[in-house]
Length: 86
Image (cartoon, rainbow, N blue to C red; front, side, top):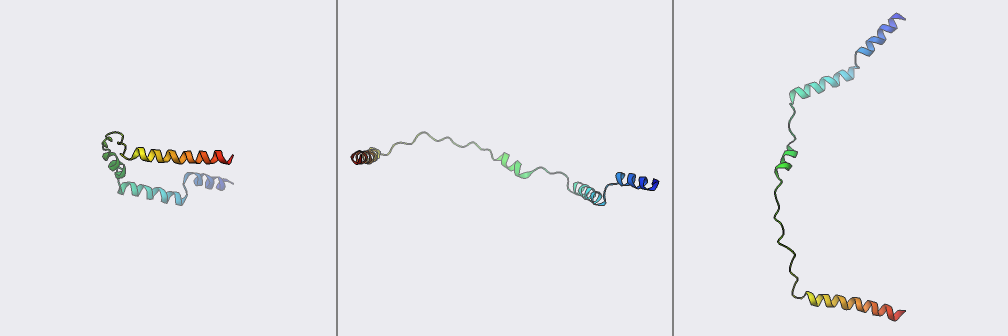
């Protein structure tokens, strides 16, 4: 019984072999490669340029009233047809 208690306490004190390997691997990576800034974020922060504002609303084309009247005629013809069908 006493030997079982000693083994249990040793098991609690020492981490598993895989955990030890993982810990050592992480340490070796951090020592070999010091932390570097994220270059992608740095590049995106540098590119913030002000875009030129549009000059204003566009001018209506010369033939716009003709198109507007055509569309109105189309709508009128639909409502007249619907009124005749009823």
